[in-house]
Length: 240
Image 1: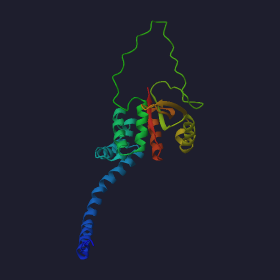
Image 2: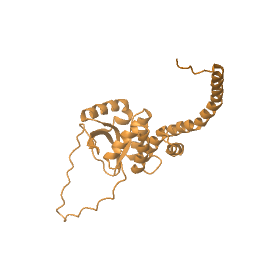
Image 3: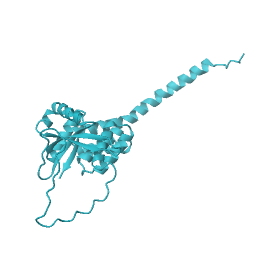
């Protein structure tokens, strides 16, 4: 028959013992190496919760640069909302894209929203201004009311903001999601109006974003912080 391969149980036990001894020496070092990163992430998330955005960025940005997807998503949110930094949707898209590459679902949803704004890729140069119509013959622009809930958000004069709180697959789901989120966040959403806005992705898929407002800019940021504290998505959308 086939010759048997000789085994050396004593030597194997010795090798296992040596490996375990090596792991016992190495693992505490690896764990200790990871402690500062976890501490910085926790500190950054705590700073976001208390709206200390400068401190949050100081903790989160190094981790985001090191490839931490949670930090990348949070840095994207800071840039998209203008929290502690000038609002920069292109920079936000960059960080959301990196987090999405690690499988972050919230980053994927945020990118879908930015894509609807034309910010998924660097924006093209602005088009030239339209010709000025002759005096007394200025056409009245008529923008159709969005396909939204009754009592949808009216336009507010001057700079203001809406908050996006969901992106879903149908208008019916959008209405249900608004009622769910309004109950869940009654302090932030009870006094504002909803709006459901359809948008089409580059792959021709139509999604519906659930918006709420109008807010002044700082109130919108504060509302988003409260919503994210409870694990929900929220992005500030300026309407100047």
